[in-house]
Image (cartoon, rainbow, N blue to C red; front, side, top):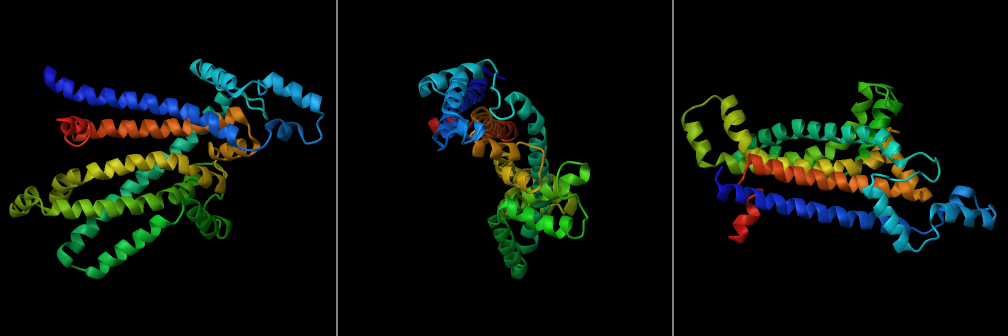
Length: 325
């Protein structure tokens, strides 16, 4: 790699790294501010409304909640730099332990949902494009766009409730709650993957329709290549760039969007603990949850940028340089 080419690759990468650092700094400020803006007194919730004022004031001083907000923020940032996320006001457990216990289950749910969505949506979108190309089977195209459009509009937790009633609570075909084995993943993963699958399928259809009229596809068809090679080897790789971009963004969204689905299925991830921490104003836990969710989304977006830069340098990392030139 020449020096000029290395510079073209490294400059946008460094720019994105700096943007990631700035975004993380903004996230730290936001995670601190959002919790303190929620009305209510966490000490009253923790000690009860009948607790003596002296006891509440003493506990507030022990936790540093009587310090001015700038001082509290300074201690918060200093502890973060040391890797100390604090201790839960209510359970007295280290917040790092709470996150370490639930984070793998939350990430596993989001990653599996993304993979399922891609596995279903990409072939479905490509099939719809191939079969309805140039006005053929207009009815099938209308059904596809109508069904996928409606599927995108339904929130994931409603899918979760419907699946729970249809497959778990009634017939008892699948576990209704908790993590007891591989079967426990089926309902929450399905609930999380339906809307993203519909969105990716619509995008894959549009991308496939565009690529079908490209010169390389005309040449491939003129060579009378087998359908499997035509679509899998020539068409699929060229339709994946935009699809992977959306899939990466959806993965970040699914990590945060799984909160409600986890509550529906009593999933042992971060979802239930996040809701409890915010309603109880458990500052250390709530701040850490917001920070973790936000950092995961930023990191996923950054990695998607890098991946697209590797797969298609013209469309990702090199884009800012082209614009600047």
